[in-house]
Image (cartoon, rainbow, N blue to C red):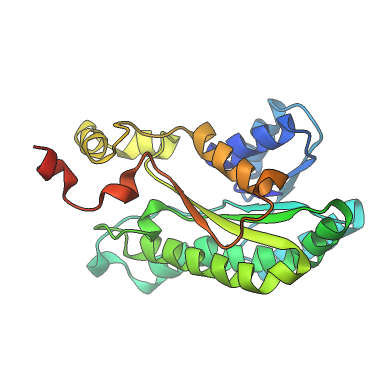
Length: 250
């Protein structure tokens, strides 16, 4: 199951999971975009229009999935809202809009799917949650008071999940993407911003959606069977270099 699956990293992850032989349930609240995405996919794929921030909708989804499939092996909590702005301009409504999807959605989806994941672990020996945080959850930046805080909370929530769900055979890990060539980034990042990111990233480029998806799919696979409670930054080395490296290079 992949949330926020109609585009970007979620869609790239769906494609990789299908290629590896998984049956995939795609979730998104944008029904039109979800239908368009499915038209170009082949494999055992299903779609559900769901807003992960709505508890009743999430619980109803868990019942439908349980009735239809009986178990779940992989949950990728990818759905998120990107909203950047100064602290002074981030009112409570804006704050909650970010938190309810980026943090509440991860909590609600995992809680609702835990029994199905435990059944997947029992039947197939592998059950994994991968939560998508962000490099903004590991290092602070201007204009990201709500977004960065929500993603930092996702990292901590992942640790809580790993600690509590491990006894059920469920692993929980986190991916923290760095700058990625998504449609959103291409639309809002000016040439100046892109050049600055290139200077700050040791690999000197943005990542691709498929590169993030590869990290996600590794953590869902039996190859990561003894990995839980970890955050993997897929960021070209951005988090490793710290603040100020471009000036040191100059």
